[in-house]
Length: 236
Ligand code: FE2
Image 1 (cartoon, helix red, strand yellow):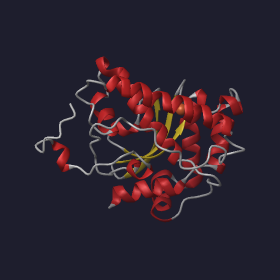
Image 2 (spheres, helix red, strand yellow; image 1 turned 60 degrees about the vertical axis):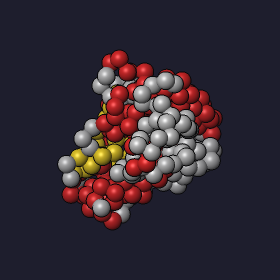
Image 3 (cartoon, protein in one colour; image 1 turned 180 degrees about the horizontal axis):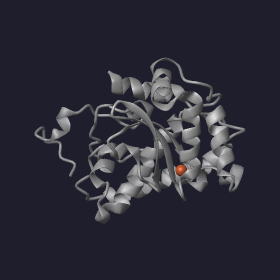
C-alpha cells in the first residue's frame, strides 16, 4: 500500500514525521504517513514533572507501557491494512463504530486519547483560564468553579474506564465523558482537553481514590492554555 505514485492523495497533504502536540490541536491539517509506522509522540514534560500529584513511576508505566503498547499493537494491526498510510486521526474516525474493526479503533483511539491527555496536563498547571476560553466558560458553563464541578462529576461519574472531556459543541462549551477507548474526536464536538480515568492513570499514586486524583489534577496540573489553543483553532 506504500505507493509513491503521484496520483495518490498523498501529494495533497503535508507530510509529517511524527504526531507531536501541535498536530493534536483540533483542526490541524490531516497528513498521510507514507510508509512510516505510527510513532509514540514524546511526552511534553519529563516523567517526574507532574509530581507530587502523578509520580514518575505512574508516568513510566502509563506512557512507557500502556501508551507504547497501543502504538506497537496498532502498527501490528495496520500491516497490510488499507488504512496503513492514513494519519492516526483518520484511522480513529474510519474505524469508529465498526464492530469488525474494534481492535484497530481501540488501539488507535487510545493512542490519540493519551497524546491529548499528556498535552492537557502541565507542571504547575491548574488555576483559571483567561481570554476567550474564560468568556466561554462563564457564558456556557456558569463560570470556572461550575466548569470544574462538571469536569469532576464527569471524571468521577464515569463507570469503569474512560475519559472526561471539555469540548466545543455547536458553538458552546460542554463537559462530556466516554467509556473505554471511546473518544470525543469522533463526536460532532471538538475536544479541548481530557482527563484519563482509567485506573492505570492513578492507581499507583491514589489506589482506588479516583476522586482525589481528579481533584489534585484539576487543581495543580490542568493545562488551560492547551484548551485555549484548541478553542482558538475552532474560532479561526
Ligand atoms: Fe491511560
